[in-house]
Length: 314
Image 1: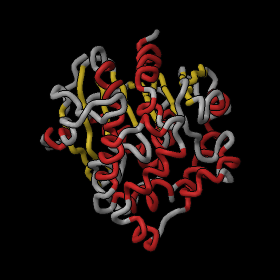
Image 2: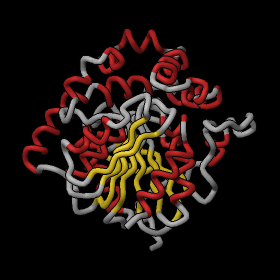
Image 3: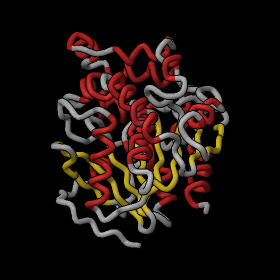
């Protein structure tokens, strides 16, 4: 069905997304969403949140993680929009969204998304998520199981569930507690250096994440408040998220909707299926070859094929 958007919104000039389009195009380049995708700011939990919305048909919500913005989903959003209404936000305090001081607990973010989609006229929807987006996605799935029809979850665990406690002692996640005013002073003007650490260490082949992509996200994370909200907002909420997740899992039990758990073979790999089997009943696993954590940047073709097949299946 065609969705009529009734929420107050202001259109954002698409020129914002045109930066870098004249650069040489490689597989990992961040590309602008087509003009058929409208850009909207929607007020969620007291702050503006940036959305891209395109296509028509059954709805799909795509949620990104740290080191990215909603821009990461462009390759799969274009394909899904051929048969679906595709909703691609920038998470709270990230990308082109506003930078409020609070509201980063994943239960709060999920509740806000559920309301925003309802206000758009969308009752049921599929989920496609990565990294921190997984954490918001779980809260949507467990709080609104009658609304989330399918879920593709990619390459990150869930706070408080599965092997989360083991993850906390993994030296690669030292950044979970890397925050505070002095940290922000150290990072200011060096956002590209910080992000390079994640792209280089958590990828199978750092060259798959090209200069245009790195510079694009470095500019977004250099926006005032962006690093503060990522570390002092999204990451700082993990401890509370873990408590919230344990409590609701004890109350609600395992998820019932079909789930595709995807991991990069140089990252979570087959472990993603095991992680989801601890909280869900109907889980199919898939492994992306020659990829680390940055699946959409490293192996977009494999990811698009998996996601579109799963979302389009009965």
